[in-house]
Amino acid sequence: MVATQEIKETVEKHDRVWSRIYAPLRRTLAGTWVKAVGGDKFQLTLDAYGGFHLRCFDTNTDEKGRYTIVGERGSHFIALYSNDGAIQLLRIEDVDALRLRLADDKQNTVIDLARRPVPA
Image (cartoon, rainbow, N blue to C red):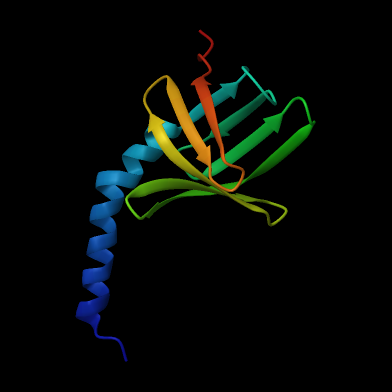
Protein backbone atom coordinates (compact mmCIF):
# COMPACT_ATOMS: atom_id res chain seq x y z
CA MET A 1 0.00 0.00 0.00
CA VAL A 2 1.30 3.44 -0.95
CA ALA A 3 1.74 5.84 1.93
CA THR A 4 -0.45 8.92 1.96
CA GLN A 5 2.60 11.12 2.52
CA GLU A 6 4.24 9.81 -0.70
CA ILE A 7 1.14 10.61 -2.72
CA LYS A 8 0.88 14.05 -1.13
CA GLU A 9 4.54 14.84 -1.98
CA THR A 10 4.07 13.66 -5.58
CA VAL A 11 0.97 15.82 -6.01
CA GLU A 12 2.72 18.86 -4.52
CA LYS A 13 5.73 18.36 -6.81
CA HIS A 14 3.45 18.08 -9.85
CA ASP A 15 1.49 21.18 -8.82
CA ARG A 16 4.70 23.22 -8.42
CA VAL A 17 5.99 22.19 -11.84
CA TRP A 18 2.56 22.76 -13.42
CA SER A 19 2.13 26.25 -11.96
CA ARG A 20 5.71 27.37 -12.69
CA ILE A 21 6.28 25.88 -16.14
CA TYR A 22 3.41 24.13 -17.89
CA ALA A 23 0.47 26.45 -17.19
CA PRO A 24 2.39 29.59 -18.33
CA LEU A 25 3.69 27.71 -21.37
CA ARG A 26 0.16 26.63 -22.34
CA ARG A 27 -1.03 30.23 -22.01
CA THR A 28 1.85 31.38 -24.23
CA LEU A 29 1.11 28.69 -26.83
CA ALA A 30 -2.65 29.34 -26.88
CA GLY A 31 -3.73 30.86 -30.17
CA THR A 32 -3.46 30.24 -33.88
CA TRP A 33 -0.05 29.75 -35.47
CA VAL A 34 0.53 29.76 -39.23
CA LYS A 35 3.29 28.56 -41.50
CA ALA A 36 3.24 30.08 -44.94
CA VAL A 37 6.90 30.01 -46.02
CA GLY A 38 8.47 26.89 -47.51
CA GLY A 39 6.88 23.46 -47.68
CA ASP A 40 3.29 22.77 -46.75
CA LYS A 41 1.13 25.73 -45.72
CA PHE A 42 -0.67 24.99 -42.47
CA GLN A 43 -2.38 26.42 -39.42
CA LEU A 44 -2.04 25.08 -35.88
CA THR A 45 -4.49 26.24 -33.23
CA LEU A 46 -3.74 25.41 -29.59
CA ASP A 47 -6.06 26.28 -26.72
CA ALA A 48 -5.06 26.78 -23.10
CA TYR A 49 -7.05 23.70 -22.07
CA GLY A 50 -5.15 21.11 -24.10
CA GLY A 51 -7.06 21.04 -27.38
CA PHE A 52 -5.52 21.42 -30.84
CA HIS A 53 -6.65 21.77 -34.46
CA LEU A 54 -4.15 21.27 -37.30
CA ARG A 55 -5.10 22.19 -40.87
CA CYS A 56 -2.69 21.64 -43.77
CA PHE A 57 -3.96 23.44 -46.85
CA ASP A 58 -1.62 21.74 -49.36
CA THR A 59 -2.45 18.16 -48.36
CA ASN A 60 -6.03 18.84 -47.23
CA THR A 61 -5.27 17.46 -43.76
CA ASP A 62 -7.63 18.41 -40.94
CA GLU A 63 -6.81 16.92 -37.52
CA LYS A 64 -8.22 17.64 -34.10
CA GLY A 65 -7.33 16.23 -30.72
CA ARG A 66 -5.64 16.88 -27.42
CA TYR A 67 -2.11 17.98 -26.62
CA THR A 68 0.10 17.96 -23.58
CA ILE A 69 3.43 19.54 -22.69
CA VAL A 70 6.16 17.06 -21.78
CA GLY A 71 9.52 17.86 -20.21
CA GLU A 72 12.28 15.41 -21.05
CA ARG A 73 16.11 15.64 -21.01
CA GLY A 74 16.14 19.41 -20.55
CA SER A 75 13.72 20.10 -23.43
CA HIS A 76 9.99 20.65 -23.66
CA PHE A 77 7.82 18.90 -26.21
CA ILE A 78 4.27 19.25 -27.47
CA ALA A 79 2.69 15.82 -27.78
CA LEU A 80 -0.28 15.98 -30.18
CA TYR A 81 -2.81 13.16 -29.70
CA SER A 82 -5.13 13.10 -32.74
CA ASN A 83 -8.67 11.81 -32.41
CA ASP A 84 -7.72 8.97 -34.79
CA GLY A 85 -5.09 7.71 -32.31
CA ALA A 86 -1.94 9.10 -33.98
CA ILE A 87 0.66 10.80 -31.79
CA GLN A 88 3.11 13.44 -32.99
CA LEU A 89 5.93 14.75 -30.81
CA LEU A 90 7.37 18.22 -31.54
CA ARG A 91 10.24 19.77 -29.58
CA ILE A 92 9.74 23.43 -28.61
CA GLU A 93 12.93 25.20 -29.67
CA ASP A 94 11.77 28.77 -29.14
CA VAL A 95 8.54 30.54 -28.31
CA ASP A 96 7.52 34.11 -27.61
CA ALA A 97 4.38 36.18 -28.13
CA LEU A 98 4.73 36.24 -31.94
CA ARG A 99 6.97 33.32 -32.98
CA LEU A 100 7.04 29.58 -32.38
CA ARG A 101 9.81 27.28 -33.55
CA LEU A 102 9.17 23.55 -33.37
CA ALA A 103 11.48 20.68 -34.31
CA ASP A 104 10.27 17.33 -35.58
CA ASP A 105 13.20 15.10 -34.68
CA LYS A 106 11.58 12.12 -36.41
CA GLN A 107 11.57 13.91 -39.78
CA ASN A 108 14.64 16.04 -38.98
CA THR A 109 12.80 19.28 -39.78
CA VAL A 110 12.32 22.65 -38.10
CA ILE A 111 8.99 24.45 -38.38
CA ASP A 112 8.87 28.24 -37.98
CA LEU A 113 5.41 29.58 -37.18
CA ALA A 114 4.01 33.05 -36.65
CA ARG A 115 1.04 33.94 -34.47
CA ARG A 116 -1.97 34.89 -36.55
CA PRO A 117 -3.25 38.28 -35.43
CA VAL A 118 -6.59 38.30 -33.67
CA PRO A 119 -9.17 40.22 -35.74
CA ALA A 120 -10.28 43.51 -34.21
